[in-house]
Image (cartoon, rainbow, N blue to C red; front, top):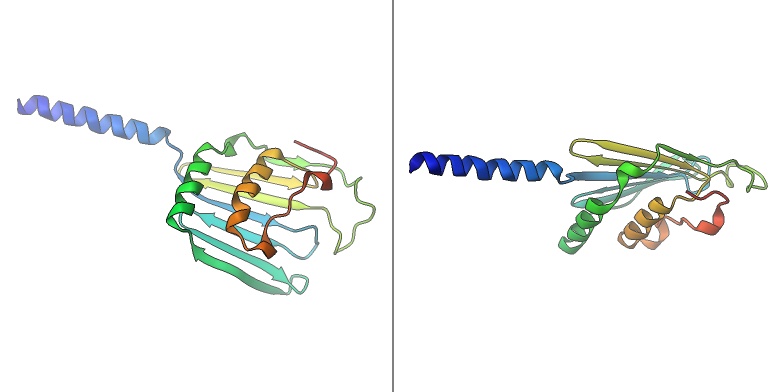
Length: 165
């Protein structure tokens, strides 16, 4: 009797461990957006339970801490669910488009560069978008923007680009 109980206990433990290995264990997503300027960027870090946004001011001379807060229980649950279904592993490492759509390039009118780093317990995924629109990234930004203050939301409009992925 005790021997059977022991084997059943081991079997149940094995089932739970095998199931847990297939589950994506999300840790964080980090976004760096140059907001079409040469010396300026906004840095976003969203973890399972918190949100931190930092940026550059004075053409990169001064760091500004926009926000650092814990996510609410509802936000955590929604974010966790979104990240479980988001296809981070299907993003290309690099998306690039020529600068043809830009009439001129200056420090205030610079090609848009956005870098995203997804960190899971057992794997990292990185992608970099230069002067192009990526539909999956737009889905991510649309989901995250309501968490951000209006002045630092990621403005990523399809009509601003000539290349689409």
